[in-house]
Amino acid sequence: MNMKIKTDERYFRSSDFYLCCFLFAKNINLVGIDKDDPKRSIFAFENSVELQELVEEFFQNKASVNPRLFASAIKEIKQQIYSNNF
Image (cartoon, rainbow, N blue to C red; front, side, top):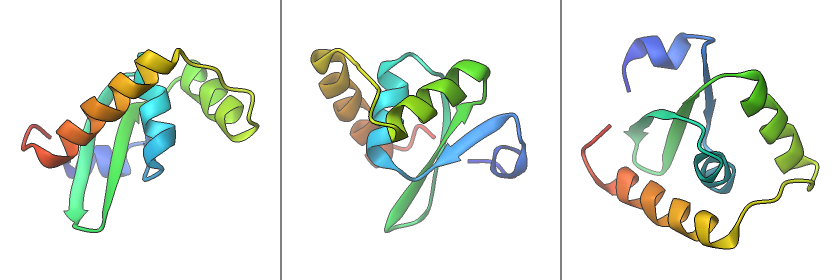
């Protein structure tokens, strides 16, 4: 992940794997993964009002997502972590 994404407020960053899978399943654009720390990946998404609402729903246990989409998102995010695409 480039330095601009690491510091730019236009991007939402999180190391919460399941939150990121949820956002990905909700079609929020994943723009990068910081893999500098081998024990923790930090995911960057385009920040938006929709993203903020989804994050709030997730942490308030009010979120819902199609289980198949969520399972697919988990697989895709894991592939992205272990690939060199980001």
